[in-house]
Image (cartoon, rainbow, N blue to C red; front, side, top):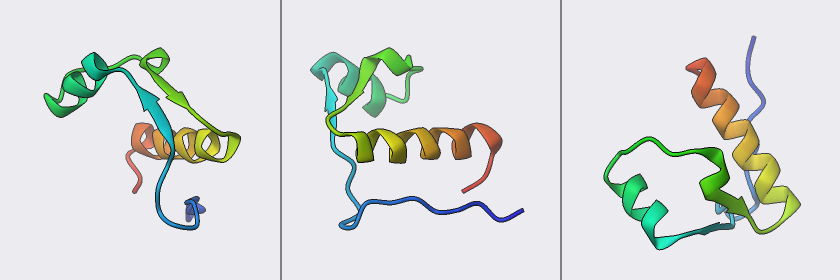
Length: 59
């Protein structure tokens, strides 16, 4: 089954991330979803879809 690609118009997702969390991301460490906060409902939907795709092994 083909997955529906969800993306914002300009290809960006708006997020608020603490500096310590950004450092973990750059170091490839495991993060918890509560560490990442979306700034709008559209970005939240895009992030949710990308996480589901990553968890299922699809791109």
